[in-house]
Image (cartoon, rainbow, N blue to C red; front, top):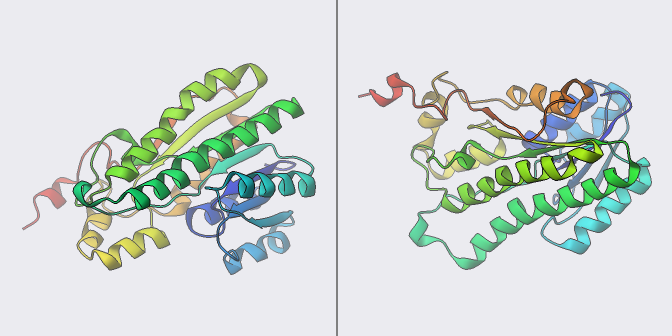
Amino acid sequence: MKGKTVLVTGGGRGIGLAICKAIAQLGGNIAVLDALPQPSKEFHTLSNIYGVESMYERVDVTLQSSLERGFENVVKKTGGIQGCVTAAGITLERPFAEHTWDESQRLLNVNVMGTFWTAKLVADHLRARGEGGSLVLIASVAAQGIIVPMQSLSIYNMSKAAVKGLVGPLAVELGDVGIRVNSISPGVIDSQMTRDNATTFPRLTDMYHNAPPVRRIGQPSDLTPLVCYLLSDASTFTTGSDFLVTGGLHAGLSPRWVDRP
């Protein structure tokens, strides 16, 4: 990753921050677009610890003007980027019949339009530079058209299926100019979002830790090696693919969990 600068949306905390840290550990520079007023304190330590450049821009990925302004600032300050990870996203635990228009629209704006427009800005930038690059979109096990046990995530599933569905068309359209596009579909990953869900719905704790066939919850570090591979030159023949990192949850449930008393 040395010599590369990577844009990470949603990199202020959680999975996005873990991705930033992994990139920095491999010598890559990082630029974050996030809605948080300030990123996690750990973000501010990455430059000194790993000797890389880092910058943070507060943006709202649901507003075109905010997203484009933040992106322009990143390009001006960094001189250009070589890769992008779209990790900005929100979830909504709600039975299908109880969804409201406004909350559904906001989730789609963050997860779908935020990803789509970020990908467009990055692709336009990389095409203009003429040096190729890599886009890594964060989808989900929920993008596979399956139900995550004990959860009602219909609008979230729909949004992540849209993210996954963007990969193939972009990989084909952008391949001629050396831009690769792939996605990662995580299973249940330990993050503030999953912890908040478990606090609101305590029944989820057991599922998170025991339903996957490997019988544990995923960690951000389970995702970061694959992200860095897809961003690096090691994956120059890899595009148009979705990679499942779920502890086996997409294949089925742990028999021990299914057969529990």
